[in-house]
Length: 455
RNA sequence: GGCUAGGUGGCAGAGUGGUUAUGCAGCGGCCUGCAAAGCCGUGUACCUCGGUUCGACUCCGGGCCUAGCCUCCA
Image (cartoon, rainbow, N blue to C red; front, side):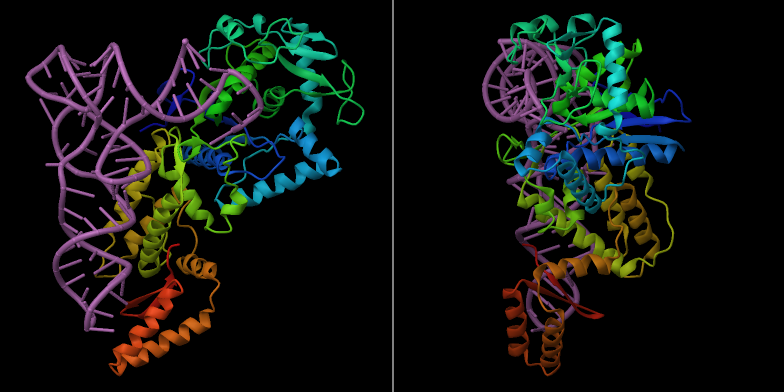
């Protein structure tokens, strides 16, 4: 089987064929670092990290770029509010982003370019756009001339003329067309800025991705990915800039867009004030639970976030880790082919999880079954799951309750002593008291284990 | 208004022109001092109305409903 990808450009699932199998290029839009990441920001990070892993199984050299946008008016605002340079804000939240994503099992991309380190490339690209007649200068701004690009609107399936008619965008008087967007804008002395042929200023929102992807991946890339809300205008504008600047007929050959995380079916967004911050969620749930939930729905579908789905994911992981604890002897193994097939079919993680659970069910209950357990662990690896030691998983779960493990162990010993005397009233009282505190006892042939109940 | 995606069993969520998704919960059984956990078994779902077909949840058309984009946004 080959890798299949749903391409937003054609609205169809297509067989993935890299332009150069010796160097596969992927660019994903990363965070603008002015705040902690919410779980909606985490979805593309998790999903496209998986894409990178899927591609890497087949291609030896996959270059995966995920940028950090570290110059932006929201960052400027946050820095001004605090009275600190923008670097303080951007570094703080970039670090937090890395920590949070690591706890979700997201690896680092091959390259992680930053906008502020590519100002020269950005200016260079804007100059080329002006030379080619695709951009014009007006009142210290440089704007992209949408009318100069015939294919504008093709990705998002919009008609340029209709967009003008229904434009809700604030139309600056110096724009030739309402749809024209800013490539470069002037900075006041108290705003961050760089010298340029158009005076001291800073880049507009879209240009940095075009400049950085060209700098690190080349003028035509294989896959460009991001959230659904970036289709328009961000990606549409990237295409326009890049193709005009390079004089090419293709910018990215495949476009992938993840669906939204919703809360009570409404899109999670800053303006609705219903964002769930990953940093906060991690105080209550293991990162692996968040990851499992993120993978439980197909990446293009909306994913409704709730405590219920978190509890379900945790219960499932408890069961799987229990199997590993009882059967895995850490021998090497290959993942179940069904899991790989599902991943290569446009990252079908729900089907992959179903296959993972079938592997789990194949594990014998009556005999030690290290072969199937190892397959379970290896299959989990393909999804970035089940990679910690089972004991570590359960220790982490216990630690959440903040109880004294020694005390629990002592109570369990007392209960078992009472049971051996057949003093079941005492034994049951101890068990009930522990249950009150959220501790569940599990009697087994090896003795009595315990763990924290689901919240 | 324009454009896009989707409506599947109690919940979450894949998929398929005729055959078991999977998980969580529930129910029955095994096990257990009794439970829990674990294991085994179990539910016969696919918005609505037409059409195509030997046969449609799956294809086509209409309708209803939901969400999203068109403005910063993953």
